[in-house]
Length: 124
Image 1 (tube, one colour):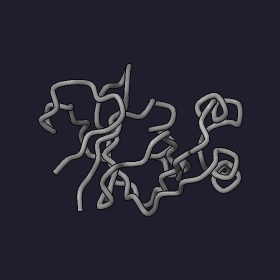
Image 2 (image 1 turned 60 degrees about the vertical axis):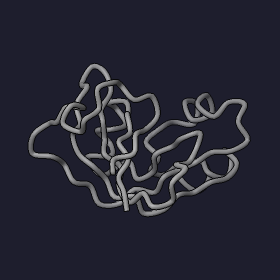
Image 3 (image 1 turned 90 degrees about the horizontal axis):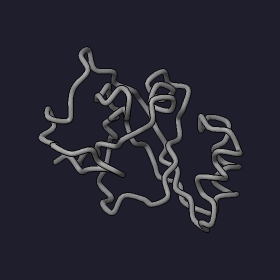
């Protein structure tokens, strides 16, 4: 099993860390199938790794169907969701589980990453 470090905007990252957002939307799914956790890198202005969340499942389908299945705890409004998936015929929703907040914020350097990831980075 492996973890993925994923950049997430502060407003969504905080919802995940608080447990109110249990789906994370992406345009593409991980190429590897053995990912069991997402390490949360909170993007600018925070720019720190604050915790991780268990990855329970991956849902994939049309943006309309994924919205119907996940909107109750996706942490995003319909307008922003539609804008994100505009022109796409596929949406991915990662089903999130148990959250582990780190006692101390960590930097990308702590994970041997010396650049700002755009989508995600496998941590082996």
